[in-house]
Image 1 (cartoon, one colour):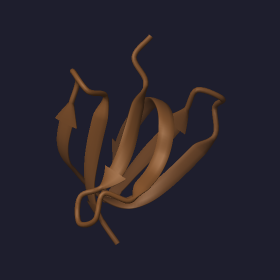
Image 2 (cartoon, rainbow, N blue to C red):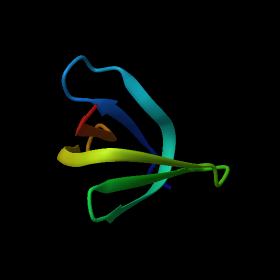
Image 3 (tube, rainbow, N blue to C red):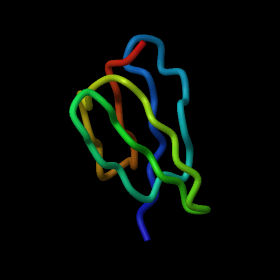
Image 4 (cartoon, rainbow, N blue to C red):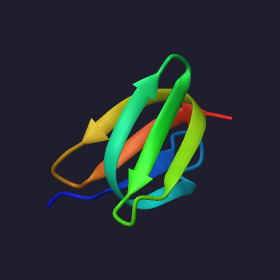
Length: 60
C-alpha cells in the first residue's frame, strides 16, 4: 500500500498524512486518509512524487 503526505506548496505545511485516495471535483481536492476521514481543500494539485509519497497542493 502506498500512502502519501499532502503539503501546501507555498510553505510545506502538512495538510494531511497517510492519504490513501485523492479525488478532484471542480476546484476542490478531496483527501481520504487510511481511516476513511475526508478532508476537502479548495485548490489544485501541483506535483505528485510517487517515489517519496509527497503531494503538493496550491491552496489557501
